[in-house]
Length: 550
Image 1 (cartoon, rainbow, N blue to C red):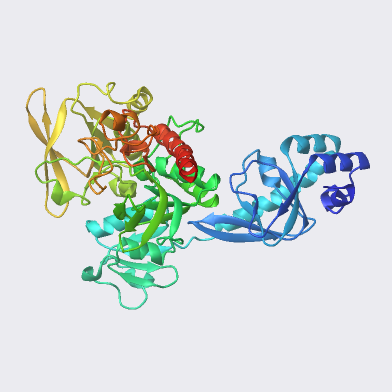
Image 2 (tube, rainbow, N blue to C red):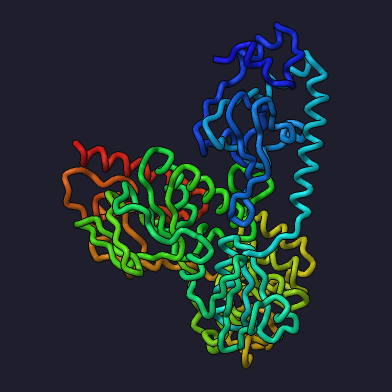
């Protein structure tokens, strides 16, 4: 319990009248923090904090790594910048040892400065000092965590760059014939036969590494820390991350397996305009990054570059690629879907060489001054078109239908109409791709007239829908003809449920195995619905664990 004597130990409050000091003592929070516990996280609500005892570390995450920016000792305060700018916290503060901190909420702070205006003046001075310190940090040259050397059209190099981009790892990319390579590469420069090659910030050199090797070398978690978990979530998209957040926050020992990068298909979206709580929209990358931070902060364990080789539903054992085996009391399938491929002449040879399925954001800078084509008329195609319009000379949407209104949200159509360099070809389809080393041209058929024309093409992105890739699941987990997992009533209707109780809404044909998000048979395919189902899945996990414990 705070006392007036505690308040007086803070120089900022030392001159307060007794009545104000007493009011502050009775209305402020008294935080007792253990070592490693956060007083406030990055993005936290603004408030004024003062250190009574212990030591507080000032940290900010750069490229996924926490960096210490300073310390707060007894008598000092923090939170001045968020109060001055009316913004969330830009940096985080955590206890370096057992620590006691005062927290003055925003409403009480404004009442305080109304009674003691000199406090506001001092807070303003402290805020200017802190902003100056942050400017110094921002002005420091940033070293990339990796330098990638590889050919522009090397598919392995393209996959590696996409992996770095999606995992938000800073990198520089250059080609093996770049004239300045010798100035940045230690020793003998890699030849084309050695590529792709990586130089990490600590001096480690990797020649033709696999994605898993790169992930481990960069310190990304790739191996489970435990042998058994309360729930194992397969897939790290919106549904999987939502399940991880709720599972970890509700005390479940939670493991997430993600074979590529957290965020799933939604993580590649350039802009999600209609997600609740983001009035100005949010990129898939940003939404995924926030969800990942939230899940890990709450205690979820998230492994990247790992996939499932086999599930033994009876023993509740999951064997991962690489041989690791973990036991899980419950399993949540949140594997999402993968982009549907086009069976068109010449396409396969150009994948990763100018032709991409989904929005490859890492290729955006390479489209400057080029004519880019996107196949598809849905929201994903519209969002990608808006994104590439800021880089390419022209962006053309090739749509089989006679109208965008049937498949695309009106807000996207309106934004596309405002972009002078975005074109739409209705009743059209790509029928052939051309090029030698990489894609240079495509043939487009006008379906209303049957005429085929060839167009110079700097890059082609395909958005024609997606399919559930669930052929790897054991046969006990029922799916429909397209691979979508049956749950709840659909399992009962198919005559595949033989247990005494009814299946839970998101429960598959195997009790204790749940499905959520796009992989589940459902007509709704939205980021918001995936997040909702992920959180609901955890509620059913609790029910299942409780019924099995009785």
